[in-house]
Figure (cartoon, rainbow, N blue to C red):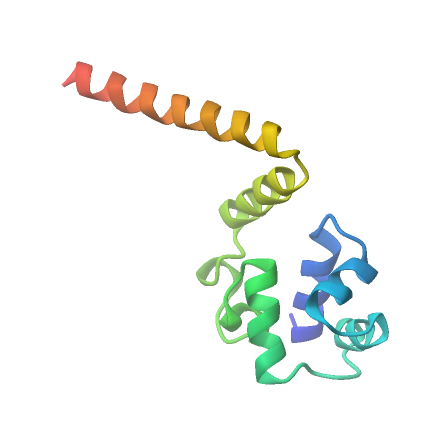
Length: 116
């Protein structure tokens, strides 16, 4: 898998449209398209920006390490999906979501303590 393939995959899995992604990375949609198609390679600064934006390692984007070592495995994909879901919620929905998640974690921890 090439750097272009990895960038293409990250953009494809992202819930926002290419124009929004490009705007948030402060590049043109044409520039993003060039990265996706392998006509251009992002510079070091852009690789860092993309890694932060897509929540993967720079090693993943640069094809230095396999996906499973760089936060691009199925667990990380689930985390990405949760993050995108969370970002699409209203503030009150986010608060409810977090409160529910804490309740689940605390219930599991309390149950484990009681069984010991």
